[in-house]
Structures are given as structure tokens and as C-alpha cells.
Length: 467
Image (cartoon, rainbow, N blue to C red; front, side):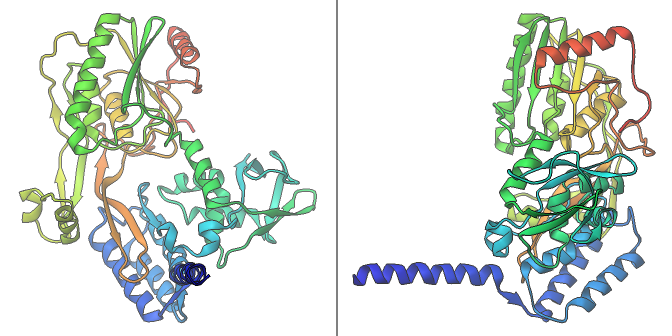
């Protein structure tokens, strides 16, 4: 009995300690120290924080937050306060997060998240999807208020807790509405009052963060099964390369190069009329993998991205922690300098057996980061035909070269880019990757191939941005 009693006491003590970590409050001074660190990171480390607002506007935002730090807060509450600062970076990679074990209990393991996505027809907001079962609401219901606040105001507010460019954040505010809206609330709640167009008010139960994570993965197509980063199959007269991820550890790059070489050898043996390379669900990683794929079908010289690279001691220290060293030109620059590098002129070497047929690059909403750069280089240099759907999660001109850090007191994690990338064409007006042949995507590859080839025969191409 003594052993059992001791074990029970140990479990209770551990639980109490865990709860204390998650829900403990930090002093105003600790919070202000973390806010000062956030300011230093945005001004001195991010590639270019003034895409949307200037420094004076940032100062007003920082002052507003600083003035609100009069009471102790949990790390979760502080994280909510600073999220809108990073929305204004127009950095689609930017993230402000806490490890699950440091989140307040309702967000970590409770049902504190509103379970709906939205659609907007230009006049009305309707429920697009409901993430919990047994709801009294259904897809298509028009809604006017949530928790007695007009829905248009809540969508605008939720966009301020997303990342990316303004129109990108508004898109996320609809597709990720319930998730983003939850972070805008001062406290956790487990039920939400939804008012419909006909005046009916419904009490809707919340769902867990894991439920929303599964929905976010479904929307992008990321985190699905991905065999060997890049794999190949022959479908009728077409070869189909599924490049599902460029997120290759540096030590595995040689193995991936060998795999891509083997794939192109198989393509040569199969002798298909057409070759499709699918990056529609590729969240990026190492851009060099995209160069490997281009080398297998094109010997044409092409221009790469130009870049502005922010010099900071913080990034140098991060590289050292990874066992890497910054380039000499970077270390020689002054703190805060933007180092400009023009786009490389790539001249592929001789490669026997390059695929010489028609090549199509398949893009979609999951085409992101270096996968977006891969497809944009191909489009801007006219190396192949871009097909599929215009990505809305990613843009051709963007921030990258990811940097991460942790706030000293709250342990809130920051992620953002130290490079600003500009596409080879230099086009900045629309900043969208518009397919040459817009085609709705389908999981049936044979059907998709047929649709693309049929549309190609009609000669219909897109020259203007589409959403």
C-alpha cells in the first residue's frame, strides 16, 4: 500500500507541476522583456518588415501591446498578443507558436476551437464545413454573428492572426476561420453562439486542436504519405513523377540525386510521349532538389531568383548552433545590411538521355516555398507548361531562408525569413503563380492527365491572374 500511495502521490505531483508550467503567469516585467526581444527580431533580423506598414506603424503597435502589459499573463495569452505583429510582415512562413506542453490546458487538450470554415459570395458568409459531428448546423447555412458580434468584423479580426500577404490572410480567415478566431479570443471557451440569417441562435460545441490540424493538413495536402520524396510511375502514354516533398536532410541530397537519376533512366526506358511532374502537394524544403528535376528534362539556360539577404548576428549564431558557418560575404557585411544578389544564370551541362517530349508541371494549393520557386522558375523561363490550380497558400515573390528563435521568458517560438526572394521575371503586380492551363485537380491521375491533354489540344491558355 505504501508503494501504491507513493506512486499516486508522484503522479499527482507531476500533474500539478505540468499544470503549473502550462497555466503559470509571468510578471509584466518578464512580458515586456520578451516584447523588447520581439521588436529587436522584427527590426534587425527579418529580411524586410516594411512590406505592408512602416516603422512608425510598428512602433504604435508595440506601444499598444506594451501599455496593455499591466497584469501577469500566461505564455499563451502573451502569444495571442504578439501574433498580429507577425501578420504584418507579409511573410507566409511566419509562425508564432508554443510547444504543446506549454499551452494552456484548454488549447492543448480541450475542445476550445470553433469547428467551422467559411465561404463568402461577395455578400453573405455561409458555413463551408463543420468539423464536429452531430451539429445542429450544416454546410451552406448563412450566418450573421458569432458570440453576438457581426461576422464580417470577426473575419477581419481573424485575418490579423494569419500569415502572408493581405489577400492571402483574408483567404485563410475563411478557410481556417474557426482556428484563427479562437486565437483572437481573450479566454478559452468550449461553446460558441452562432446566429443564422433567419435569426436562429445555435450553441455549437468546440473541437480539439488536433481536429483542426487534420483539417489544415487536408486543405494543403501536406503531411500525406510521401514515398522517397520523389517517385515515378507510367500511366498510359505519360510518365508521372510525384515530387511530394523537397524537405530532404542535407546528408541525404546525394541519395536523392541518385534516385532522380534512376527515375529519368526509367523514363528513358519507358519512352512516354509526355512527362508530368506533380508538386501540387509539396510544401518545399531544399530548392536544389527542384534543380535536379529540371536538369532531367531541360538543357536550356535559365535565370533563377534574385534575393535580398538580411545580415544579423542572430542568424550567424543560429547557423553555428547547427554546426554551420555563414559565408564570408555575409559576415563581412554590417549588422542590418540587406545584401542583394542577382538571379543566377544557370547553364545545365550535357546530359545524355534527357527527356525530350512535352513536360507539364502540376501545381495546386499545396505548392509552397521552394516547390513554388521550382514551378515559378519553369514558368518564367518557359521551360515547361504549368497546369493545375493557382496556389493561394504560397506566392512566387516571398520571404525565405528560415530563421527561428525562442523568447527568453514565455518560450514562445518565432519563425520567419531572413531572405526576400524575387521571381526571375521580376513581375510584382499580381504575385500569383497562374497555370498556363488551369485545370481542377483530382486524385485520379489518369483522369487528370486526360483532362490536361484534352485542354492542351484546344489551345486554351491563361495569361491573366485568376483566383
